Length: 95
Image (cartoon, rainbow, N blue to C red):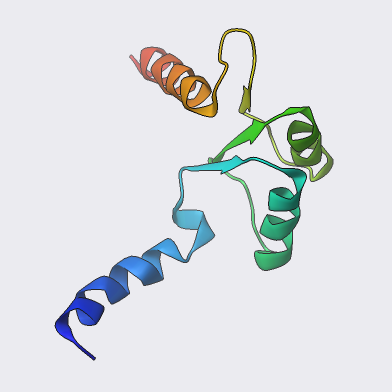
């Protein structure tokens, strides 16, 4: 194993654990299905769930997950804008 692989291994091991993510953004209902199939023991806990589009938002709800962020909306035409707004609101609430 080379030096780069040795250095990157802990990063990839940590990132392969779904519970290490603070936010999961989904752009289609298939993504929700993949989450549940690949991580059958997934518990949302404090993980923020974002969905793009009404069908994806509905899939989140049908999966029994809490939908925290939805885009597009008139106020947030992109996922980036919606996440940014959510993060600003959370920071203000924490003060």
